[in-house]
Length: 268
Image (cartoon, rainbow, N blue to C red; front, side, top):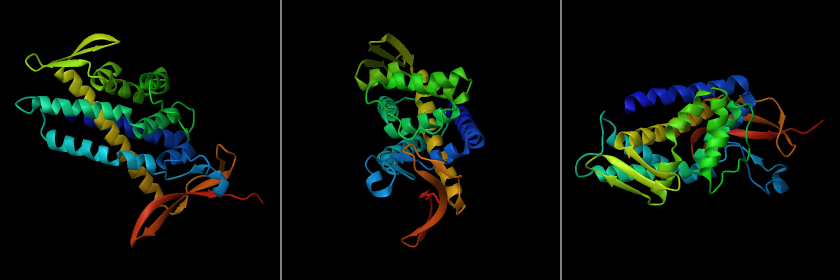
């Protein structure tokens, strides 16, 4: 199963990045540059806007590394399934991962920002990710708008996200029958049944989507940063400051790192 899902997800993410780079290059640079807003910063730096914002990424770093380690350990061989003495343990770990992934603010911000640019809305500097009601956010802000325009990312997210099974896991409203290899859920959305294979497909689409999104973000960011040049024309931030994005190699502790810089432009 994983051998079919990886190239499918990779192709959609690669196409999505190419599309926004071709159609809205400034938004593309802001996206791979993780542009964000820090309220109150304007008092010191003339704008609340920043680039290469790392805090959200830092919060998710440990969790994302665990996901990749788990996949590498268990899915290095095709045909992995929830069997044997550790089968219910593996299934339970994947339930936990599934819930955590779809509750991640950083992941949802990255996914929504990509969807918004694809949908022609431009870069979203400060998206409001709800603490509760993420189903409505994911459905109304990501899946439905993209599917309405036949943009493949919408169908991909729909293959990965199931609010019913996520809610069942998060609120302990499920039971597992190892003999029949089925998961029974009982949420406000009703009683439903999932086979192990059906859940495993949801899990793999979700984790691989997260991983490929992160991989493409970091690869394209580093490629642009190595250019040591202006990456955009001048534009106005949401708070009305004229800026330009530069990519540059920065030396720290004897090592060079590709970074973005948001340079303010003074009117003559």
